[in-house]
Length: 539
Image (cartoon, rainbow, N blue to C red):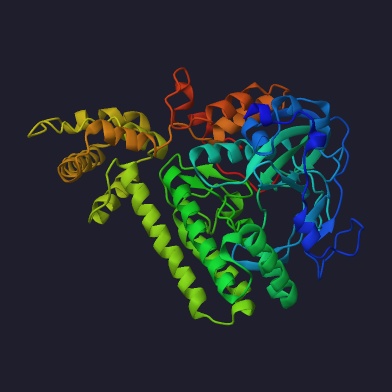
């Protein structure tokens, strides 16, 4: 593989089919405005004073056929901070709209994202390179189009962490500093402060969102809607055949199913996106736009990491499956002018429900080490209630549950409640009260019986159960306090912890001896510290 990689960035092959196939904004000025009759606006990144490479992801570089030595050059740093363009690049910002917190927001667009171009690699794959934080675009509205280090670290690390968890996601090639300060009001409390500016190069086969279709439907630009949809079919869903009503419906059903699979993965690992607006949902069923996200540390289905959502909690963990369905309905509404029938669109939405239920049942069984669920709804529901009896760390609980000794070779289990629960103690933020202990122990006894039944029905031995659970329940996730520690050090010029986390999160299901400090509950000092619990959209 490495012998096929290129060491000179100039050898990258750009095949910018998006800009070649779709209409451009005729106004080439970089002024904030409503853009009609176009899918994108050409705009160049804003040059910065002193670009500095913080980190790059070697796996993403390989997707682009880039060797490590190509990523460790000044040219790489200059290009992926926005100071230099490579031959073949055609930078532009995309036009799209979206529903934000349930309300139509009109035109949104790439307000601080600039697509450099589409690379065609040696395997025939198209990968779009997109700089986030590289300056204003016509879609920036009143914003500056820039990004700060704290949000950029979080996006860079989480994009790669999610990939290695097996969660569909956009990727991140690089993280750079600009050498300039960006003023942000982190808490929206009237106290803006200068922060280090940064740029992330995001990589995806497509950055098309639900809102990319909504904008044309909302404006009644149906011919442009058809043209954009036809392009999307040919570029991203070529297996569905030539554009037409049947292909449009097949594409919508494909999006419904891939979105269901993505949401099921979020629920499996305890990830909360925080800003599930329709402009933040990818048509490829990939996690996109890492803003105020988080992992459940306390198993609370009502938790949201987004301070903007603190009151309504629209995007809370337990509501994500329903919000995805609502967003898909908005996409269906946008595609309706091309289909002119409600029933097949509704049938596609039903396929979301079916796919999500199938994935969720599969994942729940695997999380518990079972071959499959069989009339276990009440028992699983009781587990979720048990996890909420006290503050319980979801990641740690499920990982430790794999080490539970069910003693399947004995007829009876005489262990006391305390003995049964002892292996799970590191998952609790406070000691269990007697009634909580009793209920938890009863669930564990029921679990033992369920494992015995699985062994009888499917021949599942305990080593198979543990392996199944440890391949499903990660040991290491990007907890907000871990990311914040890396950010704090990076703001002082020390990038060591960013590299440590990047390496740790490449193998989230492995034991990784010597890394046990990363497998721990959130420290008490982080409970209310900025960046360690809830976060704002400020970046």
